[in-house]
Amino acid sequence: MLEKQRITILGSTGSIGKSALDVVRHYPDRFEVVGLAAHQNISLLLKQIAEFQPACVAVSDPNALAALRQHDPPTTVLDDDRPLESLATIPVDTVLCAVVGAVGLRPLLAAIDAGNRVAVANKEPFVMAGRLVMERARKRGVEVLPVDSEHNAIFQCIHGHEQSDVACIHLTASGGPFYGRERSALEEVLPEEATKHPTWDMGAKISVDSATLMNKGLEIIEAMWLFDLPAEQIDVVIHPQSIIHSLVEFRDGNILAHLGVTDMKFPILFALTYPERVELPMKRLDLTAMKALTFDVPDFSAFPCLALARQAAITGGTAPAILNAANEEAVSAFCDHRLGFLQISDVVDAVCSMIESSSGYHLEAVLAVDQRAREAAQGVIARYAL
Ligand SMILES: NC(=O)c1ccc[n+]([C@@H]2O[C@H](COP(=O)([O-])OP(=O)(O)OC[C@H]3O[C@@H](n4cnc5c(N)ncnc54)[C@H](OP(=O)(O)O)[C@@H]3O)[C@@H](O)[C@H]2O)c1
Image: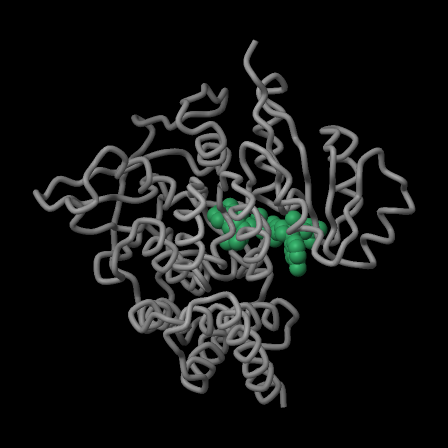
């Protein structure tokens, strides 16, 4: 009989977490869910506990934790100071990192330090501290598998090739819900419109990042660390159909592309079962139904976040951490109707100019600059609200 793969999912109540549990549902004999973690969504977590019977759960919000305890769920509820980190250290085959934002950094490092293989959807920790994450993984001999569809695609295209033969990576971007619009036409955009992505169904923060194109900027930085390439060897091409998930160009001019349907279950299954290839009984790409695959250059003036992220990538050191913190604060303010859509990039730009970056990349340096950038962003956001 096949030995079950033990997995922990950090962020099980989110878009990626739910897709991962859908994958698990397809293969009851293959996966054992050891741990689940959420922030606030206790009602969904309780359903997941009942269905998947994890040995342990962690909840990061103290009020939600107290509410969960009142239900006396049939599992161990971790309640130390850093429950997600504790959960991440429990020995498993793979920890799927699928929380949103910088809060995922410590649990990701905890999983790596404990020797757990990590499948990473949560891109912000890579943006903040990619060098630190990869250095720790190398030292601990831990595999880091990308779940983000573009990076998962690149991982598959690059596999078996010499890294020195890679000329560049082309990250594809759908262009988001506002592709083709002038900047002036984005003034009145509401969160409800920005979170409606044309090709992917995702959480609110990444949907807004896709609308501003910051998501693609964050992905440039994520790719730098995952594939050990400078920003200059990573470009972005708009591909509205989202069929090609990214491409790798080799120095002899050959280009390999990864094609697939827009469903995160495919990269999630790939990462969880790597290096095996497992049949997924889901809708496949119908090649003859595709009428066109089109490509375009990004509009840097309508979507300045992409250029800001590229600049932070080139500057290096703590610059990407500053960019990420400012963006998280600005997106959160936009979702709360405290900031306009166009002001997201203004806030990020202002904070990146206000705070000097350094070459430090250790955890303390990264967390300190993250905090400073958030405070600065709050100040800028408050000025806009006046
Ligand atoms: N969705 C996609 O298709 C996709 C694709 C590629 C990459 N990603 C990346 O994957 C990550 C997750 O994205 P998502 O779309 O799944 O986000 P999401 O739907 O918003 O889910 C976020 C998850 O993180 C938890 N969470 C939120 N705040 C937290 C906190 N302070 N501490 C601990 N946990 C917290 C949430 O718990 P509650 O539900 O309890 O609040 C939820 O489980 C992001 O970094 C995103 O960039 C997503």
